[in-house]
Length: 265
Image: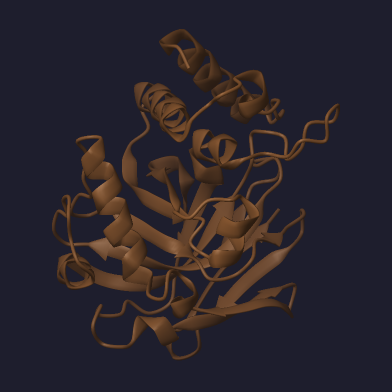
């Protein structure tokens, strides 16, 4: 994609979010769009937000399960940026109309106490982590899930450009020392309106939640970036996305580690 096309795509995504009106598939409008192009669009959109006064508070990692990777014919995760206006307190009510098509995922959030740069190991990730905590990620899509004329569905480039479908984050429950428990066995029952919708374990995220952060550190280094102390990193969902509608209440019960919840007004 040309710089002009990247800027145009970022502007379209920004307007889609503001107007709550989805745009067409960027991958269809830009044949040959690569993952590098998609990350360039994401970066340009984030720059627009920073120009409006937003602040980066962390990162998200997506597409960490084998099933999701197979569905999109890829073998690596993707990532997006968390901004301060995406933060919701535990138990918060999401205002009506805030999102277009919100969905929920349950994850383990890593809160960093030191920088993480380049080639790192799982042990390096745990050493750099202040604590981990139960979390919910609110997903939204500013891009249509499928083109109405051709039936073609979004591909990974559309998802990446759309800030990896990120829209909100909720942290709750217990703050856990990163080596206090085996994170592969930290999991949750995710309930919508009191009924269990999904269950999962941390081991469903690349076999260990820290592995996604290893990947993220390496990927960011390719672009001269790194994970910073104080940032929140969502390590990847261990459930399928749960569709939500106005009036829905979501609770993720992490057993001995507490619960995290939100309500859609």
